[in-house]
Length: 230
Image 1: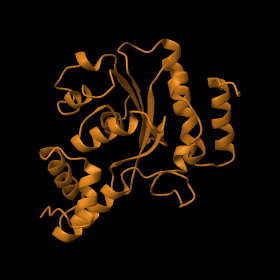
Image 2: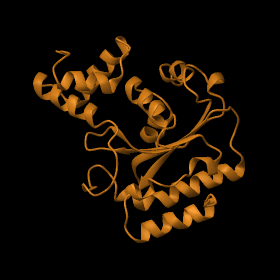
Image 3: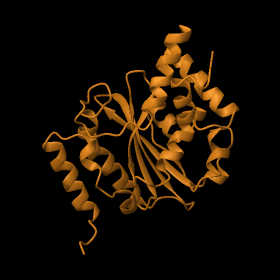
Image 4: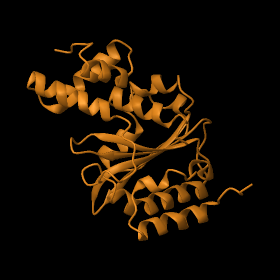
C-alpha cells in the first residue's frame, strides 16, 4: 500500500508541474485538503464573461461543488467576496457569522456540511484571476501552521492557474467545466432576449432561487427549451 504524501511532497510536485508548464488538470490526482485540516478545496477562475467558473475540487466527490454552486446561484458568499475584493476571507463558525455578511449563502450553508471557511484570491501581476476556497465540517480557527500552509499552496498554484485561465487554457488543459451548461444557457438567453450576458445570468439565478431548482438542471431545460425564461 502506497503511504499518503505529506504536504512538502505535494508542494514539490506543484513546483515541478509549474516548471514543466502544466495546467491545473495535472492536479486531478492530488489530495491536498486533508493535509491542510480541511474537508474540501475548490478553485474558481474568472472566465471571459467576468464570472467565476469552478474548475477543480478536492476531493472530487466532496461538498466543494455543492457549496460553490450555492454561492454562484445566490450571488454571495466567501469565494465571491475574496475574488471581488481581493482579500482573504475567513469565518471560523458559519453558524455564528453575522447574517448581513452573506444573507443568502449563510442560511443555505447551514443545510450543508460546512461550518468554517477560508477563501483567498488568486492574483497574478496585480489582477485577481480566481479564488482558492477551503471548507471544514467542524467550526474553529485554522492553526497558524495550517493557515501558513494554505497560503503556501496558494502561491504554488499560481503558475498553473495562469496557464489554466478559461480565456487562455486550450482544450488539453484537462479541466472540468462544472458550469459549462449554465454559461451556455446564459449566452443563449442573452442572444434570444437581446440582453447583456450578466442580465441573462441574473435571470437564470432568480428563476432557480424562486423555484428552488438546481441551476444546472434549469440550464439544461432552458437549452432544450423545456423551460421558457422570456
